[in-house]
Length: 151
Length: 83
Image (cartoon, rainbow over all chains, first blue to last red):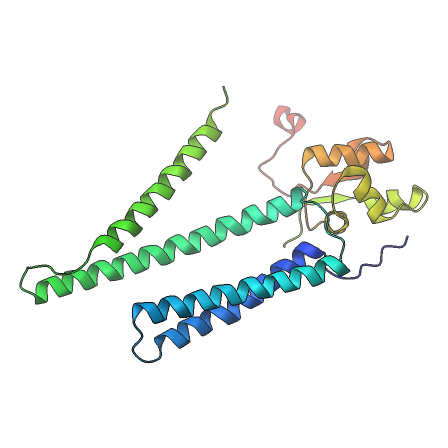
């Protein structure tokens, strides 16, 4: 039985590349953007640069992988892995977003109190994030409700 | 990934099927070789559909390919219920 493997398949290597580039690029982007007083344009430029760098690296790596590895179509195990990863990462995202939302709200409350009740605090990001969370929860419950229907 | 409770005889069945390779089996049932590797190592439980396809390739009943190690004492058979 000749079953010697030559390593992880295309999808596994692609995933590993995405993991490494995300772990290296975006913390660097955060570090660079937090150094000194950056205005919004500079922040946008740094973030855009980070995104473009990751895209370019991913394209190059995918080309190299495609030349040297057989890419097989998604099967049920790939879909199962993707679903599980998506579920866990979604939970992490929701937790982080709620934490940031609470911090923003508390900060806004402190600033409002410091200004004697008058408010010059821009609350639209808060509404935007909160609205997005509500929408995602509605989608989740709707999909679950449909799944429970057997008729 | 932790091991599943579903074990299998796929490696043995492949050997007796003219030493069929994992890639050949994967191609026949439409999955990747890595999936066959994961199933053989009991790292992944295939769907019922996939399990039936594997059994069909070897021309044997499903229970000749897969077995379930049920340590859950809450699960009783009908026989145990009637005793």
